[in-house]
Image 1: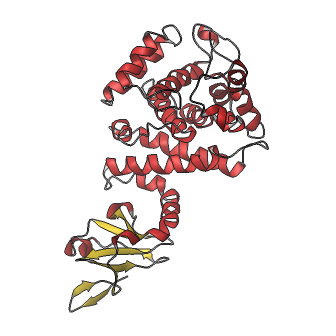
Image 2: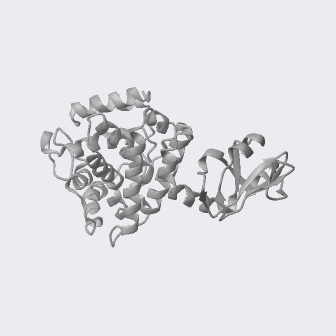
Length: 335
């Protein structure tokens, strides 16, 4: 990876560029030792960028070399961003559990990569159902999230990177993070966390079959348009019909718009007739929607969103689960 000259390590290549716009910066610690990727790594020496490792090489990051050269960051060609993101996705699990990587950096990687993976699926119309490959990627995201969110201080760190501009994919990740965090305070078994987390990432997939001009409409919906929007939980189940979903995941998808006072849809269920995990989903779904910029409303601050849920929307949520949400947000210093 590098040669030695008179006992001192030297860089692999000659200076190649002075143009900062040709590169984007990454942390040295985001490259795992003894892994390989289809992208080049450069170091910045004075005003020049110099090749450190070529694509396809094993990234045998040498602490001695990086210490001697005072290296804290690498540079990757902008033209190879996609290959770098593929590397992150492939090694996401190991990175999230790598204690040498600061929790803030791991949180950023987790949130950015999870939303990118979901974005690839949730912006696609799905009249023929959910692609099995996309479903497997979603399962993988949830599994890594459950492990990562079990680490102390993770939710507070992740919250720093949460997008407040509403997109179906960011909203689904946000709801998953909140739902898993609430359930973890209830000593929920891992398998149950995975099933509920999967329900969270899939809960709005039915909206891929609703016209964008309705979903993104800034004005009040007509009765006909609103009736169409309210079909998205049932449409979601149809999209997932070829996938072996568990009852917990199915309940999260189908009943996340039910309300404790019976005013929700699609079934108008009330109280404990609403499956428990769907009640968790309902609280998290509304909180994230209220704290995100939507076409028809500006984002509320966390405290104001919680106040709305207990004021204007009072009675719509299971009070025990609502209190758990407040507890989780308070411990994460989000409110």
